[in-house]
Image (cartoon, helix red, strand yellow):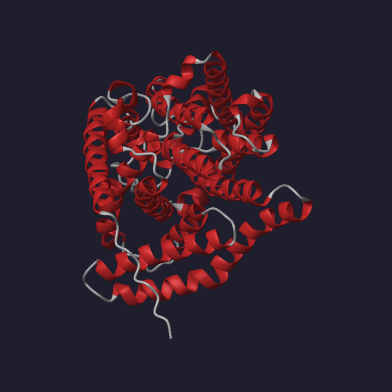
Amino acid sequence: MTTAAPVPAIDHHALLVFLLQLALLLLLAVSLGQLAARFRMPAIVGELLAGVLVGPSVLSHLLPGVAGWLLPERAAQMHLLDAVGQLGVLLLVGVTGMELDFGLVRRRGATAVRVSLAGLILPLGLGVGTGLLLPASLLPDGTDPTVFALFLGVALCVSAIPVIAKTLLDMDLLHREVGQLTLASGVIDDVIGWFLLSVVSAMATAGLTAGRLTASLLYPVAVVVSALLVGRPAVRLALRAAGRSPEPGPTVAVAALAVLLGAAGTHALGLEAVFGAFVSGVLISTSGELDPRKLAPLRTTVLAFLAPLYFATAGLRMDLTALARPEVLGAACAVLAVAVLGKFAGAYAGAKLSRMTGWEALALGAGMNSRGVIEVIVAMTGLRLGILGPETYTVVILVAIVTSLMAPPVLRAAMARVEEGTETGKALGGSLAPPPPAKV
């Protein structure tokens, strides 16, 4: 009987580099995120900038020797950093699902659906068209142009609930009709956006044959149905058992376990792991057995530690020097214009169909235009799957940054012309507890 050789421990030097990578990225991400927040910008802008400074855009040009030591081109070394980032994004997406207020969607009803669908369909169509028109030289070798175009459409149609909620909170607009309608529409955007991302990602890995295309469409539906029939009762029972403890530990463990198992399940089916994490988060939020206060330690760990690291690693992949090439700069301007025009026009049309005033419709468009966190996750998914190359990845991240920076001033200008108490429709009763504002 032969005995398997023991698995060697991580190399001493590799562990040293890994620890220094984590320390430097976390230090820069938290510091620059706080600095961005002080200037009333989304924290994600500073966190992405942390990676940009350490990555090929800055450090590799200023101190190539240091950059080569800190970020060696060995795949195994970068995989350590990527593993931490993947854990961070899965838990972040799970927490996002836990924070969604579906009661708000029910209260807003048809109006939220109209605004959300119009704000999704128009930028989705424009994004697909733009993707088909971009130069083939910007696509990674072997990428199907149709899959790339579909992916770009998904990237341009999403909205970011954390950015929207933080902006509305800062401007004291959460209690206003437009504020609550914007959040309700954003919830619908999130749900549909994660579904579309999973479908397109499955197409990218399985190909575009008729059978595989059908499977790509049916698998996400099967996941949702299974989650409702099997996952929800299981999550409810687990949370009920964990809730008997006065300590938050068991509840945090059950929530994290549900997110990781959901992510593993969808990943095993060839879908995106973030889709399973999101579905699990929604199951937790709708279980009826959750004490939100007991999830505070999980939120704090994710939002203050794992998420900044993830966005810093996302910034590492950006190469702003690529914008010096005219075709990349032209593509960036075109994609940004399409993203802003599509989301504004779509949300504006949906609002006008609901007989809202022009300024209310403009305010909705400004709020829905924020991409932030969700866009970065979509871009990182595309880069990992090989759908996006360094140039197109940089372009999509720029869209996330610029649209998030645009939202507050445009929303502020529009709402200044909408007097409180005169908004279309009836004011909502009750209060809305926004998601924790630490991560935008």
